[in-house]
Image 1 (cartoon, rainbow, N blue to C red):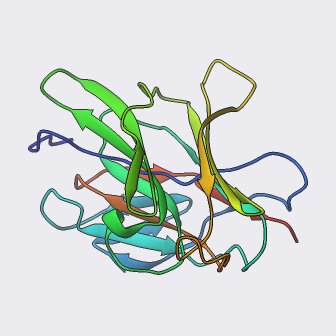
Image 2 (image 1 turned 90 degrees about the vertical axis):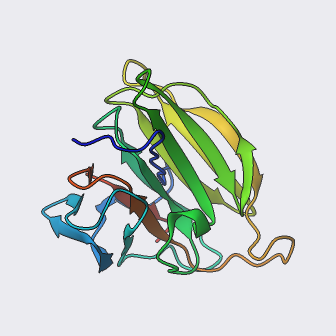
Image 3 (image 1 turned 45 degrees about the vertical axis):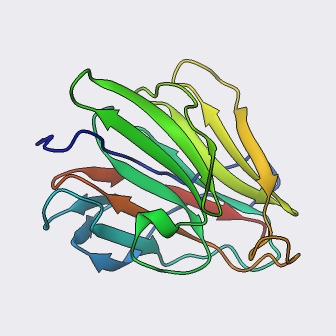
Length: 196
């Protein structure tokens, strides 16, 4: 894979535990320089940059608990993945997102957490192949969580208010959204679930 930019990023949206419906593979739509084959979404055209986007057909209904789940398949990709209420075709506008950053100069990576436009966790640590991340809405709270590849339990990275717009007390329908930096990069086996 080409690495022509200093930083790349992956944002993901992720899942929570029991009490929800069965997890579904995300069916992607709204393709912009992307295409889906099976459960894999790929960047198929465009120069390096966050100019390749898609969103899920499935939605978490308004005022409903739910989550999206993402499993890391590469440690040198640049993507964003998260939950959002509007399809804006840019990763930087995803309401609740994980931003996976890769530096090709020293092969370092880390995850940033961004909530409603604010960088709430600048560096939550390295990520590894097989790590799982989820973003879930429960009541009026949004949770960002991680399960390392060698662990069985989820740990909380950050939690905050889930109101959209901020402070409104409103919890609109949410769908998965993503943006991919490098051509040829993929997002595979992303899941969504919500209370039926």
